[in-house]
Length: 516
Image 1 (tube, one colour):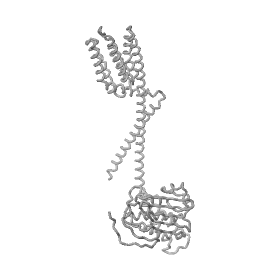
Image 2 (tube, one colour; image 1 turned 45 degrees about the horizontal axis):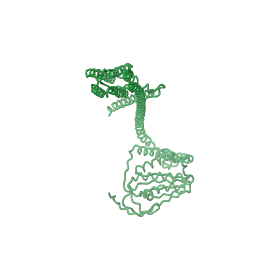
Image 3 (cartoon, helix red, strand yellow; image 1 turned 45 degrees about the vertical axis):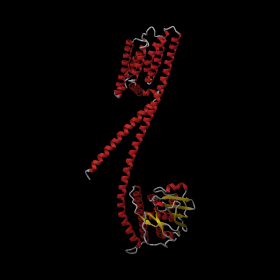
Image 4 (cartoon, one colour; image 1 turned 30 degrees about the vertical axis):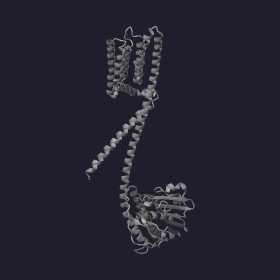
């Protein structure tokens, strides 16, 4: 065991160090995202790397689509242009296209530091200019004498298709968009304006208009890309915040578990360390109080011994209640269930409380409904519940008051115990306080009634372990009624007749087994 302790300590230190490193990384990530999102300049400028990545990714994905389009254009152009010239143009276009693809692949494989360099944007712009110029050569190819207007219309349609394609590919980098489309538009416009026919003037004007339209479309696509990147950054920011919150939650849970272990160890130690001297204090003070070894000459000493004995018992009860509540909260309190009559438990507790009630001239009234069956429950736990509730009722009921106890059926078919007193009651705003551990109402504080404030917490916990319910109703100046109930699932499938009144019963004594 001794050799395992250092290993466990080292493992715990390593885990804590990893958590600390993780929190620092999360903090840096959150700080970077916040600095980007909170920059006073245009937020779009902060997404240069992301937009370059989109540009390169689009080029790579269109690696085989562009050659297919160029092949179709070349095949149709053979009707008006010499095949040798078309083949040469096709080869040049394919080479410029794959040059851009290779450049995009190189960018994707580059490290983050290399991607930050501005040379990549110049390379992309230059590559797109060369690529656009290769398509511009198509509109300068010499055509045969009998080509007619068909080739002109085909050239204009090709211009629209290629400009649209380049707009979609280069929209994330506006400089590249202009570099890939302007050469074609300028060549086609100049070529059409050199002709004297009205149709050529019309097509030249439409080419310029198409260039403007696709440029505006490219700007809109750029805005959409920036919006998408902003949403992605917000999502990353939220994920980073959640990761940080999760790390903090893990750390808080670890600390809570460590504190709970420390509390359990403390309670286990203190229960032994306090109970041992308390037993001696209670024993000797009781001997002195009862004058077992002879009468005391001074009456004050006898009073002091009684005070010591009472204080010791109060402290012992406090320790026991704290330990009971701790065991219940830790899930270590086991129920030893058996078939029992709930009214028997209530009657026994009432008998135990008769002395205290008689000392304050308080009348105890007990009633129950007939035919109540046995319940499957822990007798010790139910006795503790009823004693705590009866003790509170007698404690806070003034002299000459009444405490009424009733056992009966719930509306769901279970059984309940109701304890109602004629005490001062509890203000509505103080009810949540008295239901908490160590919580006490203003009346208990003013009257300095001895108590720990743990009784109702223990009652709620024990009833909860039986799947039951706890309710407290109080009216200021009229009294308080506390009801605990057990579910119908804990009823046994037989009943026995019981009559009212403490100390009188009319029931068979034979035990009956519970059927399935």
